[in-house]
Length: 74
Image 1: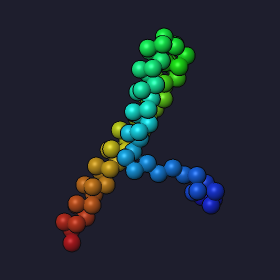
Image 2 (image 1 turned 60 degrees about the horizontal axis):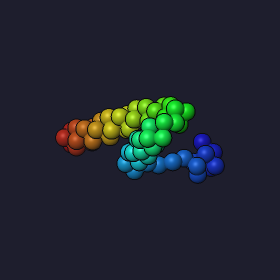
Image 3 (image 1 turned 90 degrees about the vertical axis):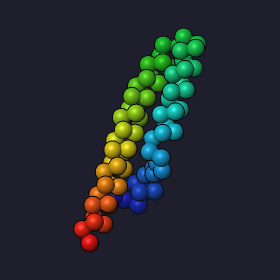
Image 4 (image 1 turned 60 degrees about the vertical axis):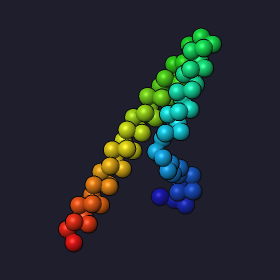
């Protein structure tokens, strides 16, 4: 990994929760104003970030469990 790519790598401390909330709001706004194009975009983004959040939570739970099991071995 180059220095530039590590510089631009994002680190989400709460996973993708803020992105999920943002795109949920965008869906509400697009639905309110009957904007189909923005609604479809927000829906696809929400689906993407929801899946990423699920993966993040599963990985976090896995890491916590692995840490607990590792602590029990010693």
